Image (cartoon, rainbow, N blue to C red; front, side):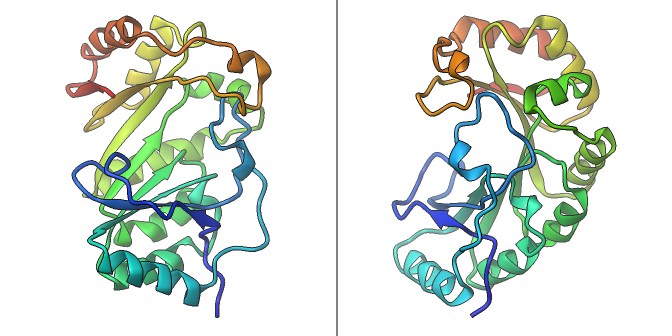
Length: 231
């Protein structure tokens, strides 16, 4: 009964977390970032008790019987867990497609995980020189760039995405992000959605990102990235 990197999961299937698939959304715990607008702040601390391998297999077997064909793994930061590849091996043994969300600060674990992945979504929150201000922690530029290169060269389907926050992201920020992720296959702009549990109270009061702002940034980004989608 070995531990896995999965802390918890949503028992109800999802049709939006992994486009084109019916997926089960699973979460790891622990993140080295402390983003001011994190939507899962309860998952920032590392948890000692995670789902055991025998229990994960029961969950996977039940999901398989109920037409679920994919597993989406988010966090926290999944690649912060050194046993993530072992967990992915268990999931893959049941025939599921796997989508992984990551912010790219643990490239070594990401590299070991790549053989098991079918889709990767990498969050690129801000230009690299501004990232530490947002995450309130030291960020290795080399690690982020290494993860970005690994993903681009992997042959695995992927997207790079930025949550656009009103009053935080500027046109110049978006241009710089595009330059840093140059030649990315797909760049996704998604709205910031205020919630009462956001770590920074000032972000709880910010408005949801208006569609015209997302479309404005989309137009700007298309000068640098071929495929830019608003989600």
